[in-house]
Image (cartoon, rainbow, N blue to C red; front, side, top):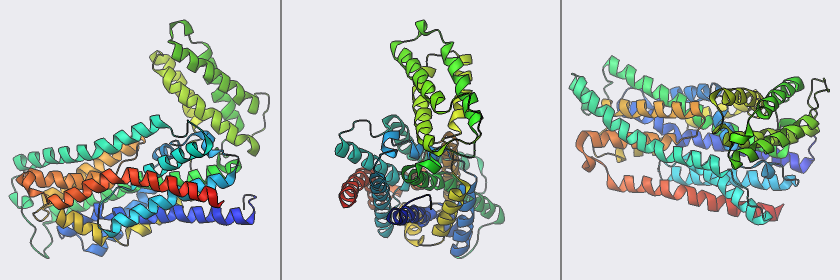
Amino acid sequence: MFGLEAGLLILFLFCLFCACAFEFVNGFHDTANAVATVIYTNSLQPWTAVAWSGIWNFIGVMTGGVSVAMGIVNLLPVDMLIDQNVWHSVAMILALLFSAIIWNLGTWYFGLPASSSHTLIGSILGVGLAFGLTNNATDTVNWSKAGEIGLSLLVSPLFGFSVTILLMYILRRTVENKDIFKEPPKKQPPPLWIRAILIFTCTGVSWAHGNNDGQKGVGLVMLILISIVPLHFAIDSRLDKQGLQTHAAALHQTVSELDTSRLSAKAQESVALISRELGELQQVVPLKDRRREIAPDTRMEIRRDILLINKQAKTLEKEMSAQEAKAMSASLDGLKAYTDYAPRWVVVMISISLGLGTMVGWKRIVRTIGEKIGKQHLTYAQGASAELVAASTIGVASFVGLPVSTTHVLSSGIAGSMVASNGIRNLQPKTIRNIAMAWILTLPVSIFLSASLYVFFRWLF
């Protein structure tokens, strides 16, 4: 398979299995975020809720695109992904997968709603830093992308907390039926209209979770494929060579027509670097060559050129006119179609893993969300408000291509709904402290764990 020797093939398949295992664990770790409210308001029976959530997680992955997945892949620089020693790539993949799975399982065991997103990002940063230390390299993490992701992970739970408080305030002012603010009767389903709303919000969170978190699994698999078998997966080989030539020529024309005298020194440097990379790209894929297929041995070089061009274009875009930026963006989108992709079988594999994971192991964290965040029983209004805000937040994050923590957005939303009902005293300090501790520790622990595992696997291989 893919021309790999037997030992490497086994490790390659094992890495794919571990990526599916991570997504499976992610499924049962995060299922509680979607089903806790419908279970604790008696809107659905537990197993019905879990099965329904699993189906919509599956659909969410299948319809999610790849923008978040590529954000995960692009956290690491191209040079790390094309390390000439393929065993170093295997060490990288195993280290970040093992560290992410270990922390996810540990927090699940103790019933803590920790973030799979935080865990994965920390694991990737850890192997990047360890790679830099072991190879005397400095540019081993895409800090710009890491900053964007870090900001989204920080802001999203604060947004969930505050917007849920606001939504609860609006509901209290506008809804005449005050029963939605009372504790649900035991073993008695809510009125049909309330039940419909809660099932709808559960569906929304499940779909949004699959849409966002499923892409993280897709990104993991693409890291594996690009690192270990780049000749086959560095770019989308289904796209033809002529399209690549056309977009490269259009971008070259846009950049060459710029009046560089009005640009800053940094932007002028970006113009020079883009021109150089476009020149290299046109050498690899010459305009006179009309063959459709892109040669396998040039695919990683093409990927490198496109990613470097895109990086410099972000700097240059700030000083371009709207018309110039639009023309450059159109050409860049055409080029990025070759690098920002995932084979259909990868998406299906991750969809199945996440969907199956959703159907097991959910009870521990459901109990934390439903019983231990607030001192009162979850009401209809609280459950619907928290889930509506969570689904909307995660959906917007997926649209702009940023990973967010479903766990933190929803648990902060539940906390916000409790505060909106009876003030800060309505929260259980011990649970909030434990969740906050998990939130603080996840990043440094996963960085340290993945870095240590990377050094160990480098030594082992």
